Length: 293
Image 1 (cartoon, rainbow, N blue to C red):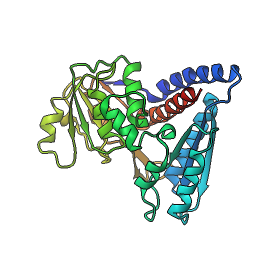
Image 2 (image 1 turned 180 degrees about the horizontal axis):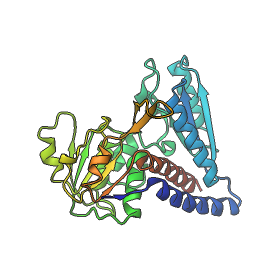
Image 3 (image 1 turned 45 degrees about the horizontal axis):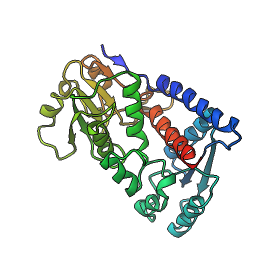
Image 4 (image 1 turned 120 degrees about the vertical axis):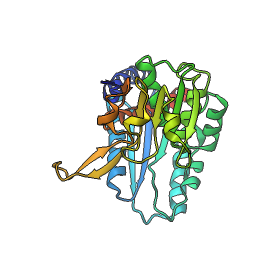
């Protein structure tokens, strides 16, 4: 049976480390880091995410603010609010929770956030710096959180074959870059796969590390994983399940019950990558505050 990579326990460790740094900042007479999240509309999942981020801010001593707007807000009104936050010296990080209503161009919004406050790492400048191996930008929170998880568990990546399933700009693409960069959690040989990849099973069976971020529940089956491989499950999908009190359950991109018997180490869903995404966000916000100081 695989060792469980406990993202919740690791996130608690890093929260304590971040809280110590915040205490040092405030003890020197400076204000605490301030993260602002914008939520447009009433999507239940999005609301849960931003509330979790606000709660995490409080736990580490950050100031956390959530701004709620109706889904009828115009793009111009939303961009005006983003620019107002860009100009506020008392705010270090800004995230706009995705997805946005169809009448709002997501790229226009993410590119309006100044790179210095783009703690989600979606701005073209931050993406470009990541691609160049320049650490002065901000890395997308989920891939950053995954590298922190790998580092915590002492998982060796150098010289390993890592297969990333999914090529999104939020997870798959930046994750492939991080694993291939010259760094403590890099230097891997990376294959980036996606929905058009042929003979995917043949490729994943060669993988020492699999990062599944394709957004399809239970996509990675046991026969796609070689014995002892490290399996990182980024996916999270709500599935109907009448046996559960809530009427639904969360599933990852990996068939956990089957793959757990084959893999060497594996992240669960929930409680694996999810908590580490929040840590990545807090880490970036802390760096933004420190750079301002």
